[in-house]
Length: 117
Image (cartoon, rainbow, N blue to C red; front, side):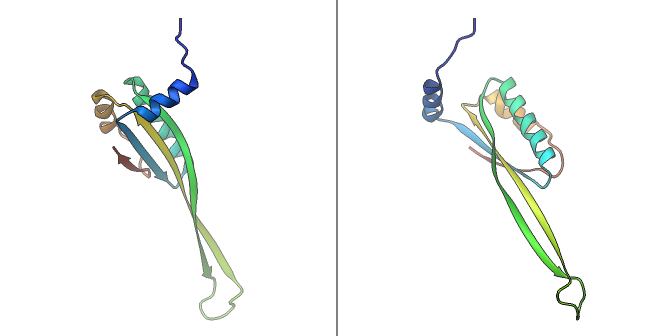
């Protein structure tokens, strides 16, 4: 039989935990970012760690306006934007096996990772 844990006890366990790893992921393409987050979560759960996330963080938008013509026609402009998608994954009470498996993990190109212990 599966043992059920009340949400209050789970929240208390998360707050009382001494060691946690926060992983911030950034990418221009949200599909690659979601695949990477899923891969990290599956790896951490396979080794027995408690995982919170992926938590979507606000998307950063950078908009650039460029004149089409060099000297004339100031009203003719092009607008370009770059979007940086972000996710946060929190691993609570990681085991040494969890940390070892996360360091050996290969993620797709284009995904930036920041790890805080």
